[in-house]
Amino acid sequence: MTECVNPSNICRGELIVIAGNSNPKLAQDVVNSLGIELGEAEVKHFADGEINVKINDTVRGKDVYIIQPTSYPTNDNLMELLILTDACRRASAGHVNVVVPYYGYARQDRKTRGREPISAKLVANLITVSGADRVITMDLHAGQIQGYFDIPLDHFSAIRLLSSYFKKEAFGKSDDYVVVSPDLGGVTRARNFADYLKLTIAIIEKRRPKPNVSEVMNVIGDFKGKHCILVDDMIDTAGTICNAANYLMENGAKDVSMAATHGVLSGPAIERLEESCLKEIVITDTIQLPEEKKIDKIKIMSIAPLLAEAIKRINSYESISGLFEDAK
Image 1 (cartoon, rainbow, N blue to C red):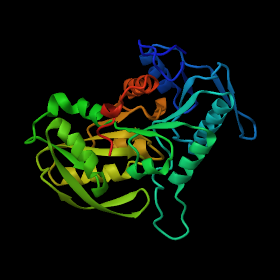
Image 2: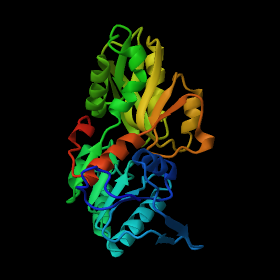
Image 3: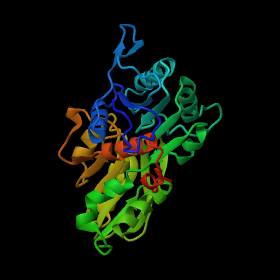
């Protein structure tokens, strides 16, 4: 906890950051960047699976930030977020801001067949009804989810952070490097990434016969003889990415690396990545990676400084537009 982090003392109230169980390390890194202590909250599970929350710090009138990505186990982590939010609201917090670096259910953003839900919208409703005043998130799978909320939502991007990893070796070397979008839907993301590195892009055309399965049909753009950097918002089971990397290598790429904001890494993902032709995989810490999933190929970059700066500016009524200029 701390008083206003703005030297002018113009702020929304005393700042406190609380962590759920999904990514306590990220929360600790954020408060370290802010120079404050992490708020004390206990999140426990009863024997029957029910979640019990106890916030040990006073939050009355304070500007509260709850850091809780809704990653695996998605439903448990979502319920933790909702219950923490409700607890803060009932304890008379001045503002309740939920920081959801990874927004679960984002891939269920529209109806593709009859009698299907729009689960991303349902989650937005639940967060709002639980008592949140503001949502902070990173690289939503579908940008239109921003419009599912009737409360302020700040949508940040890790594109600049991820591209910085490759800047020293790739900047401006368009004859040797190319940024590749794994599908048509990710073209804007790939173009933003390429703009930072002054590179060109290539686009993979694919079809997806069923979830987590894709087939490469064609590649638009010049990639032969070049170092390819695949860019996506997430890596889930890694099937799509590994197929894309194999296709690029089999058709003349020099080597293939991968950059993605969210390392979901479900099921066989780690085994696939380990055995794949991918040179390296660069992700962020929006999702806490268990020790057993940390392999030499995976490099992790932290979004904690970005989130800390966003929290500081929001608390101090400062502009944050420059922090999310790449999120579309």
